[in-house]
Image (cartoon, rainbow, N blue to C red; front, side, top):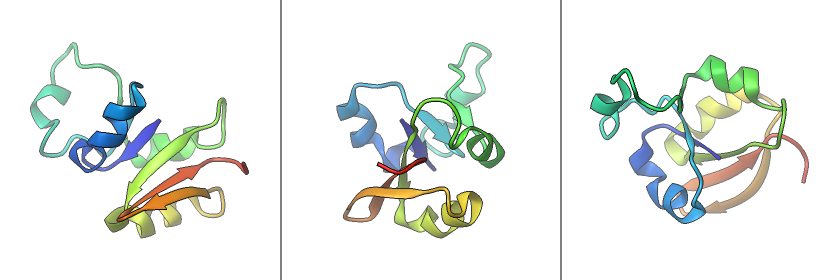
Length: 97
């Protein structure tokens, strides 16, 4: 499970999935201080990390808030498949269902 942007935008998905999520460009407001600690979990990714991992290994699911959708589409191109959408969020995966 990967969440794009600030963790607070996808916190309910992360909480109810019961899984450890990776955060892309997620060192924003709610995670800023803790992300810089030396013992912080290795969950923080940048765009280039997401692009490199997307489509490799096990299936990935990415939660994208509407405001980041165009950027993610440009970053990942035709390597995204829509799983579901609810309100202002899209759930994408890295290979056909």
